[in-house]
Length: 86
Image (cartoon, rainbow, N blue to C red):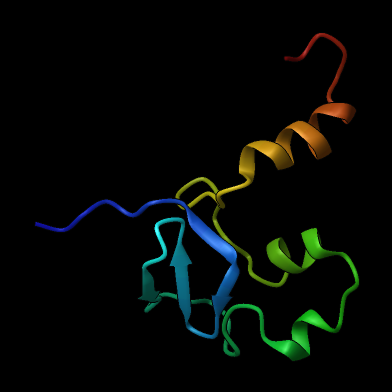
């Protein structure tokens, strides 16, 4: 029986392999990037770590959220949320 995927650690994912928060390294057969995750040529093209992870990686965070997703929402999204939105 296949085990459900845990949260993905995008910071430690490289090439066509990604690492989950338990430290398992998995081959991503559906990786949409020809160079894979965190390729140096793409990382060096930008200077913001948050954009490197989400724009270059084009991850679907609804199906495989990164391990620090809550902190990203709390620190980067909620300060600009409409008044009254919790």
